[in-house]
Image (cartoon, rainbow, N blue to C red):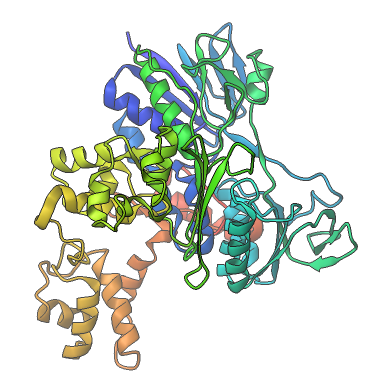
Length: 600
């Protein structure tokens, strides 16, 4: 008989756990997920590029509705669980849905810490944890103005960069003397602060917030030293705490987080905890790599295996375009430690390795981070580096006293060397997937292994592995066609439109030998855009193509129709707007209506 698996939470950790579970034992469980957010699983570590405008929500979706349907997963969106009945083995959501379980996984994540200073409840005071937070930031950013970010940690700086990209003036307030003090030493922090200043972000360190100013909304903040900073938004990025309240109310053992053993089991043998809400050996992890490692262990346990999670060594990368930063391990000073430092002021490069008993225990790289994965692998394996002590700081390619071919350095990496830290993908998984599945492009590798599919910092390494594995048959410079209708890439199409003086979509398709009669939803909007740009006075805008291009305002269905989410600006509407929506619903017999104040 199929067992019932219920999951509370739909974040990245339970998503990866399900991928591993379905790969190993499809059909073993009848899976039900309760998600407090009204959407599918998405890549939270990519919220920063969404905030900066470099990616859209659609770009960061991990599992779409079709994935849940294909795997027979029941997903309850917008269904926050409010109670666990351990005696009856049921969970109940605040909207009245009850589900029974044989095995339960609690993956409730974490809660942002909001400093309880006067004014912290004003509209415009935001956390930075999920897509709803990003949507609210983008709405306020439409009016430009100034954003104040409290906290110069990883999330705080990424929020500051994103809001700056949206056209806001940004000031970052930080309590400590240097930024990202948990991940960087003072030298690297200085370089990072300098780079952020050059991007127009003001940073004030050794500053404590006294209160948030405003009557009906945020108007600024006042610091303890009396300084006042005007602003239209305050983003608090000062830390998180495990969301363990639900488990505690159910009588499950909770310390800082939900206490789990090496199999991710809680004090109740039928209940497991996974992700940021879990506490393993006294530690709670907030980075994705350890969450994926524990997800693999839990998937194995749910299949009847005996895998164990022994904790993780973590590393940090900042997702700010143009800034290369890598940090891992312990970089504090001590009498029993040595350090190797390389500085290149002209190139803006700083590297520091911390050694103890001829083993790397910490690394900070700024400006040049290509060897981060190699240093991290040496650190995780506690490798004795005595033989390469003199050239260690120059990286893997310089071992042996002189520079080697970088490809040889990548080839020398062991199969278990981590390539993609965001998704926990090792070298062996990538190369075996390339060989066994016949992968020939970077997009193929991303789709099958998830390597390079998140922040993209490992893209160079992945392409080197593809070159090593495929040899001359791999050409990373090969042009990707703009769609299935043509073999030409976007650059070639744009160049030929200008060179041939093509001023209509039919002319482009005929002269450039399109494979279809009238194009598709990918090429028509692109052609329409190129023609409008090149011949604004002669080309008649194709509104049909423009409508296709604006399909992000709706979700296209397989039959060519669209589901539309009407936006009510600021949550404010009128009887005439509601009546118009009702008329459309009646006319087309629409089974469900959703409204949102969020940006569409």
